Amino acid sequence: MIKLLVVWVLNAVALMAVTYLVPGIHVANFTAALVAALVIGLVNVLILLTLPITLLTLGLFILVINGLLFWAVGNYLQGFSVSSILIGVIGALVYSVISGVLSAIVVDGKD
Image 1 (cartoon, rainbow, N blue to C red):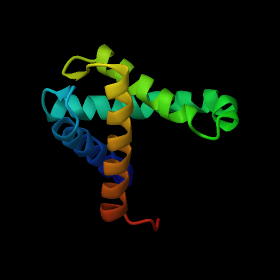
Image 2: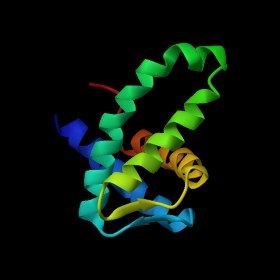
Image 3: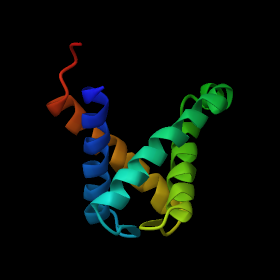
Image 4: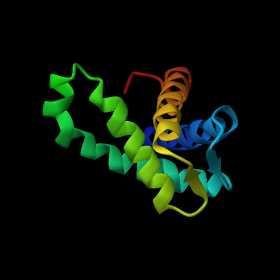
């Protein structure tokens, strides 16, 4: 349970870092980043529905889906905004890299 909370906070930190690295993405404050990280995590479950087309495109479609979901969450939540779908794709890539690196550094892989 604590590991899940740590990953959630790390994802919010990664989202705050994305706002400094990708112009067009704005997060009002850390609370908004926490909410956005939670919603992005929940919405990513929809990626399972696109598995057949993702396999057909050798994984490239996942970039489009991640960008669309990132952009959609940005349009849905107050305090988190993404200016376009292309910015959403770039932001989703940067967010994935940063959160992956942070999780690898902070969270121990052993249970």
